[in-house]
Length: 365
Length: 132
Image (cartoon, rainbow over all chains, first blue to last red; front, top):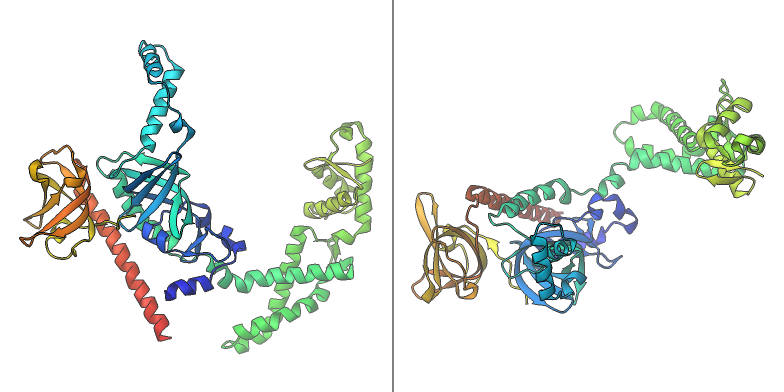
């Protein structure tokens, strides 16, 4: 009970569920665990096993209970650790009752040697019917989402079939595999790692990038130098260095400036990779141009597209991004990156100054 | 209503008193003896140079095809009888002749050790949270 409460407190936000690979698989959990998983408070029919979000499972077990209705079977499946109800909808194929005399005649036609699709289909239907119709004692494999119906967990089968396992080979393989899966996947806390472990380096960088992005947007700055940025990023550091330098105070003093410098470099690199900044000229003076504010570049790109769209070669399709990139590098600056050009193109397109004819092709009128 | 989960048990655990009365179990063994008029079958296994027999009441699974000498797996509830023995009232009785018994035992052990390992970890964790 205590563990259950703790788990619900630590329930990861639904935004992060997709990061867990187990979320998108059919988890091969023991029925006992399926019945005991804690239910999510955020979304119904999502459950947590060891803080792994789970909504669909894969189960193999013996049928120990059976109820048939017009449109579905309800099988109780026992895997040796628990028993769970499985709701198995009948396929339309099963509900159709073929005329027995007709199918018998067709079958004799097929026996003469020629390939008879109707008889083959009938055979297929029969095989499927046999696989879907189970009795107590048969082995059932079922995959599907877990639902809570009248306060009881059940599996709504997406796929279910009778497993032919006369010497228990499938069951033994399953019994050997599942503990391994538990050890390697389900019992490992995966979701918490990125929060705790990656926090220090990864999110510091993303925080820094966001700070600079906001600064650039607010000030409408057209150029940035590392020194300006360093002041902006400085507030990010004290909190970080205080926690880290408890026992390494003498080292932390001189290195904090270096670390700041390194962070600045990394941040600027990220921003360049995203195309937000680019260096017009590679010189001693490190100046980064803010792509979106660079009206000269904007005009240059617009002119290139307008001019080249008139040429016969590009008239129909428009100009490809790489063609524009070569032209810009030729006429404007050698250091324009593709990412920066894409930022410009997006801005021009938003202003309806250029039109994309299809993916990566642009034209102007 | 759903029946209780039938946990794998070895034939030599059934009669030794390790299994409580009314517990759901599944157990394997070679069919050595079958009395249809009394619905009584006997599954036996060699273990540690001893023959272990489990008496199975087959009333609920009849009619079935008895092959003497074949491996069967029975699933059901245990029941004490007057003479002090244990009878398994079978809900399922499947012929699994040809099964690799050694591998099956390994799989059962694997599953058991997994659960005991996990329970140990959980009790340790509970101890830890209790202490702090």
